Length: 79
Image 1: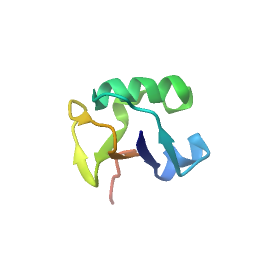
Image 2 (image 1 turned 180 degrees about the vertical axis):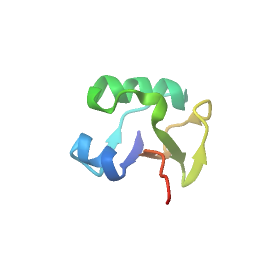
Image 3 (image 1 turned 135 degrees about the horizontal axis):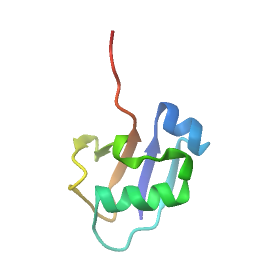
């Protein structure tokens, strides 16, 4: 199981701020995002989404392991 946190527009589209997600074996961030998009197609394209694993920004090839906390958010631009 992993704890998933959603922020900003992602939370609005999923209609939740957090949920527990079953995960029995490690997967890459990219693989997990595919599952996320399958569950929430309105988040596509997944390549634009960013991940933080255990409160650290993570590339899409980073592994997500059972017990991790995963945050999903969109890139932020300043001005």
